[in-house]
Length: 136
Image (cartoon, rainbow, N blue to C red; front, side, top):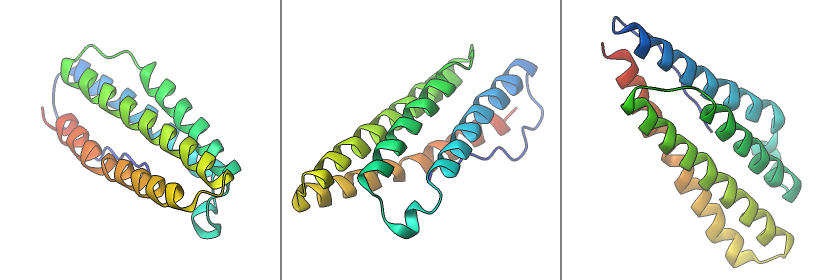
């Protein structure tokens, strides 16, 4: 689901490198927490409790990445976009949990599609972030 990998930072201003490492490290830490807390969910299907847990974990990932002190304008923009993504996904997970709990199949189907659309935005964002961080 949420994955960020920073292969090589390359040569560049020290501050940019340090901030990239800190920001990507926070993303990866959050992603690891999500994977540990929802292990097996993809295979077994998502229950209401698992969706609510996912939403809570996404909130925590957002808070974790938000705490990283960033002075580089571009990294601040990446941070804001990533925070919006985690908030959107957490909201979608909560709404889906509510729809599943209410046995509203039509709404559940729409919200599942919405969650999938939000998740699809993560890979391009991470690719842009990695490209930025690898460029001196």
